[in-house]
Image (cartoon, rainbow, N blue to C red; front, side):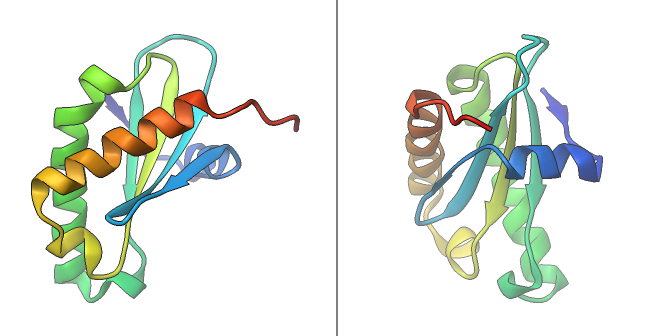
Length: 114
């Protein structure tokens, strides 16, 4: 699993499918090359100060590390966006369930015509 780092990669995922859940927002894009799963993490200042944002991102990274190998698809980019208070305070098992549910919705969504 590779980590997204370029702004253009995040913007490409933002134009693709998205699914909100109580603990996070997930954006997913099929690159079409089948070359592994890539993931990015972000939290805006709405989440809180730097300590709160970093805590939320650490939790998102751990959830992605556990869930994406079994539920993610090769050739897809995913961006996990933290939510104010919810990402940091939600029980970890529910956060995992949120990601699994969001991935199922993203993978089964009808294709958009761009």
